[in-house]
Amino acid sequence: MLSINPKDISTVKLHSYLLSAVAPRPIALASTVDIDGNPNLSPFSFFNVFSANPPILIFSPARRVRGNTTKHTLENVKATKEVVINMVNYDIVQQMSLSSTEYPEGVNEFKKAGFTMLSSEKVTPFRVAESPIQLECKVTKVVELGKEGGAGNLIICEVVKLHIKEEFLDEEGAIDQQKLDLVARAGGSLYSRAKDGFFEIPKPLTILGVGVDAIPSEIRKSPILTGNDLGMLGNIEAIPSESDVNKFAKEHKQNIGDNTLKKHTFAKAFLEKNDVESAWKVLLMN
Image 1 (cartoon, rainbow, N blue to C red):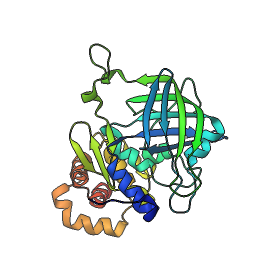
Image 2 (image 1 turned 90 degrees about the vertical axis):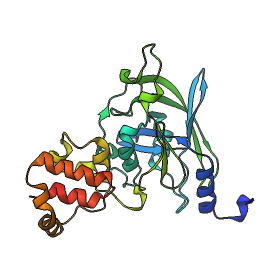
Image 3 (image 1 turned 180 degrees about the vertical axis):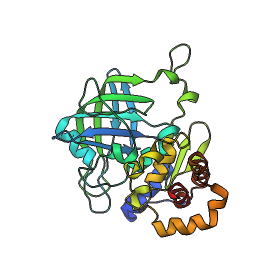
């Protein structure tokens, strides 16, 4: 058996072991605003429910291991004492992943991930309209667990309003877990789906994805492509150049043609194989 003293290994290594050992973990897609009302959206898997009376949720935006800096979410909740926790199911998991990208301050992750901002009733931060369950919360306490990189910050918040889409309820009004189809986080790039177990999503943190808002309108409004498909398309560092698209078209246009729906169907097939670049080239073909 491998036995480890946490003080004998690097924080990066310890972080990797802990996230793989304590899994799967539910995901809190946290919506906040800064002191000027600018929206921010970011997912966290150090998260759970800890009380029903009062209804208490806790999530923890850790200090970055590299650079020992803090995340916008933590800064915002300290300033405003409000947050909306949006639950993540399989239908929005790619968009959620894209929202975790380290965009600069002031960039609206709702737009980058292709999410719809929905006004809350009890707090200022917006809800994610596509989320199956949205929990408006007042922050009651922030507990700093350390000052070094990797240290957590427990954000203790009380639920003041719940919103549950009726399509995920059973005949008795209870949440149907099969319909809800939540996803959870494991180690590395692994996720767990309530229905099917583990699947993998490339982590977006190593690149700055162009975002769903960079996708042409006619593609965003496609009847073929889903929100997950758009999330994958938005998680690319650069849109293929015209010359690359033309080269690709010479090899494949005879199979695809000019019909828009047919192009979108071919692009979706590439996305199902995680070939995002080829999907983009199909969509951009003239």
